[in-house]
Length: 93
Image (cartoon, rainbow, N blue to C red; front, side, top):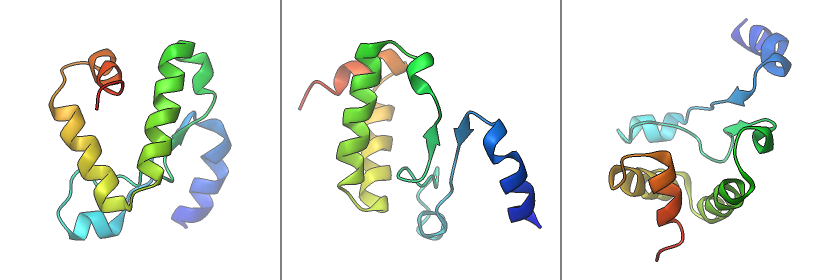
């Protein structure tokens, strides 16, 4: 039943957040499936320079397995206070 409801509303939302049971079972929180989660029409929400950094970040995270991707993202996010600051760190090694 949940799947039927999901499919009915799928086209109306702007964001899809998929959870990952394996991350949850390993106690990695938030247990978000980075590869399957997305925002539609994000080019309307952020500036071009931010969008390029977001796409670069996704490209890097997609090369990793789910555990590594989420842990890397959490590690980077914990070191910054804002989204803008986080995106600025993506230029650094």
